[in-house]
Structure formats: structure tokens, C-alpha cells
Image 1 (tube, helix red, strand yellow):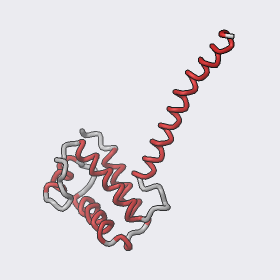
Image 2 (tube, helix red, strand yellow; image 1 turned 90 degrees about the vertical axis):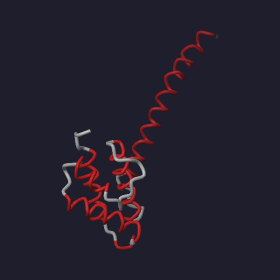
Image 3 (tube, one colour; image 1 turned 60 degrees about the vertical axis):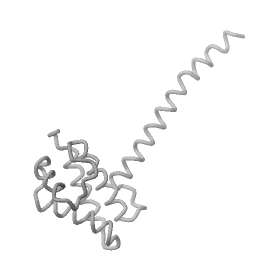
Length: 129
């Protein structure tokens, strides 16, 4: 009897990590969809704010003091200094779009979501750390 239980145990020992890896992969994919604003069931404003939060997290990892408001002068100055892919006009537009998402949510469109996602990708792919 013990010989027949050994293959079952080996199968369970293999199956558990595979299932856990699949669950972690699914959770990661769903999280990225939310962060990148790909979940079209959510309103545009929520998606823009989620992407802006991801941009902010990237900037904090690069040295922006945590808690710095996007309204403060230090925010665009940091972007101009550290993120060379965005121009001053693009930085102003990004901050303005985030503020519109927070305070005038009904005015946003899919194009606004795409613009914020584009800025996120450019900042994320910036090789300067």
C-alpha cells in the first residue's frame, strides 16, 4: 500500500506550487490591468487617477520625496530634472489631467486615459535611475 501512495504524494507536491504560481500570475495580470487603466468597465476618471498613482509611485522610487503634492512646485521641478522624456508642457498637461480626473471627472474621455497611459509608459521605460 505504501508504494501506491508515494506517486500521489509526489503529484500533490508538484501540483500545489503549480497552482500557486498560476494564481499569482493571474493576480499580477489583473493588477496590471487596473494600474494601466485597461479595465474599461471603470469610469475614465478612475482609470486616469490609477495610472497617475502608478506614475507617482515610479517617481517616489526615483527620489521624489513621498508625500509631495502634484500641486507643489517641487513636483514639476523633479520631473523636469529626472524625466527627460517629458517636456514642460507635457508635465503641465499630465498634472492638469490628474486634477481634472479628481475634480471634474465627467469631462474625461478615452483619449485622456490613453494620454496618461502613454506618459506612464514613457516614465516607466526611462532608463535613468
